[in-house]
Image 1 (cartoon, rainbow, N blue to C red):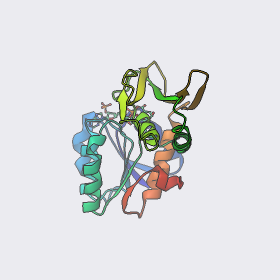
Image 2 (cartoon, helix red, strand yellow):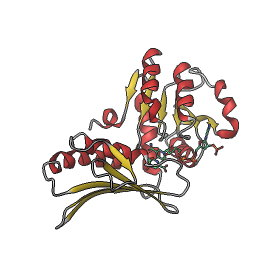
Image 3 (tube, helix red, strand yellow):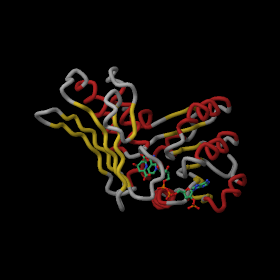
Length: 238
Ligand SMILES: NC(=O)C1=CN([C@@H]2O[C@H](COP(=O)(O)OP(=O)(O)OC[C@H]3O[C@@H](n4cnc5c(N)ncnc54)[C@H](OP(=O)(O)O)[C@@H]3O)[C@@H](O)[C@H]2O)C=CC1
Ligand SMILES: O=C(O)C1=N[C@H](C(=O)O)C[C@H](O)C1
């Protein structure tokens, strides 16, 4: 595939390594400083764009691709207030858009088990459920996109909880997502069910960014020739 990398930071560079090792060609690398070059790329020059940038730029980048017939895979987090708009744009242009808050196969298995465990645990009100996510110091958004997807998976079973809350365990009617920032942590997500007598935990700890990059390249290949809005549940049949 001819891949345009929109975002050439930690993820863009890891994806470049993974994609070139699999024989794909990188046709362009867009970062903050050369973002004005984005308009040079078209559906003729580019099979797919892989977008990992920043909450403030993700929607504009995705819109550029959809407006210009370039299939786009995005993993940027912190911009999902505009997700419906992006989906509508994709439908309007009969385009191809793949989004995941986390592309690693392991995290998507974790999401699957998380939903199953929540569906069983909601009957046992002696257990309080909470989420903790830990990331590196450069991360600009919180809670993490993965933390929010994890919360949504739990809330689909917990009708007594009124949504999630960031870093406020005192708000008992909501599911708390605690965020911690520490040097060099790639991404850790833990769901805890605590009672007076015991504790049950389900967690995922990423050792490197390779799993995210592998999933993004897999999604880009899978998206070729498809039209519509997709996510990891479609790719992995979960
Ligand atoms: N879905 C998933 O599996 C994963 C998602 N992520 C998400 O991906 C995103 C990127 O993460 P990461 O690579 O670690 O971040 P980095 O900060 O390392 O890289 C971000 C890249 O985006 C560019 N960028 C920033 N702002 C703009 C802008 N306004 N216009 C164009 N380009 C811009 C930066 O350019 P410059 O360096 O010039 O500023 C840089 O190239 C984050 O939202 C993160 O949460 C991360 C890992 C996995
Ligand atoms: O910014 C990161 O690094 C990560 N962001 C994603 C998120 O917000 O969930 C995925 C992963 O945890 C790494």
